[in-house]
Length: 289
Ligand SMILES: NC(=O)c1ccc[n+]([C@@H]2O[C@H](COP(=O)([O-])OP(=O)(O)OC[C@H]3O[C@@H](n4cnc5c(N)ncnc54)[C@H](OP(=O)(O)O)[C@@H]3O)[C@@H](O)[C@H]2O)c1
Image 1 (spheres, rainbow, N blue to C red):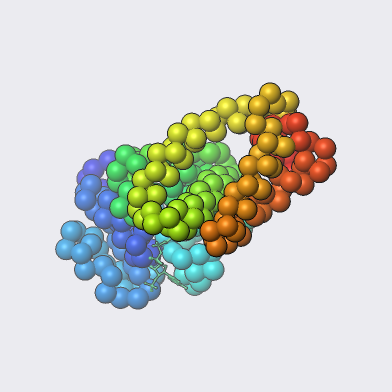
Image 2 (image 1 turned 90 degrees about the horizontal axis):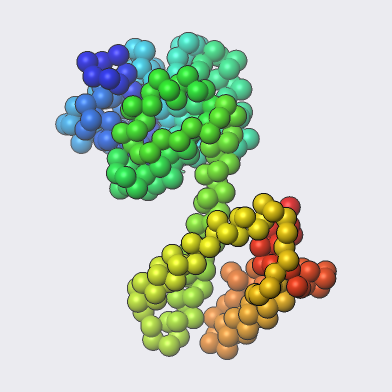
């Protein structure tokens, strides 16, 4: 341990996210060693007090926790495999985005080398790191999470989701799925509104207000799904089918491709044709399962 409550940290990867994480640690006085495949990305960090390592081998000297924040699963394996024999008995937190199976594969690989492994999913963009808006999901070794929790909380709210190393990645990617379809819906809407001379930023302000209001109903949708009772008084699937059909036609009318919305329309239409027209919109989840 260093002079403060945090153990030393080695950050492998100084892309946009690695730099943000290392900056939050250094700023809080954590002894931080940094390494990046391509040199020249650590000048500001070194000026702020970080220790620059010229190689991965040099970076992992000492007994601090190792944090990888690289491009993808392949780059993590490529970076750590050559030094695997020197990682035995160490603690490693992977904050690189990987699929749940890739996270489990990293956990299994770590176990064969007697490395204590915690995986993480960052629910933030770099400028949010170290602010109240950042949240990082973790799963895998509870011992690693508890030991380094004070340092992890410097990065953002830290949530532990159990010993299955794939769980954090699963929740991360499930949330990203919602994010991507939300942005796609905005792009479609902005293209439509643009045909009437409405700027994308003007439409963005309206969409943010509308989507924020509608998002409040997600827990209620969840309650319907969890109950499995899809009886609906209003806005059932037949109603949604008609609404989606109208939006697709409106897109064609103004010369905008409906291809982002079309899959949603198709899945709702299929349910109606399968005889579920009087059931709730939330039943759409059953068409995916
Ligand atoms: N940025 C975000 O908003 C955000 C949000 C949540 C999660 N994440 C996740 O955080 C991770 C890093 O994202 P980022 O934004 O920092 O990406 P980035 O700016 O593109 O940086 C990628 C990093 O990976 C390194 N790298 C790539 N291939 C490598 C290899 N084969 N061996 C060693 N290092 C390699 C790069 O090194 P070089 O400089 O040498 O190319 C660089 O340090 C990703 O998994 C990403 O999904 C990012």
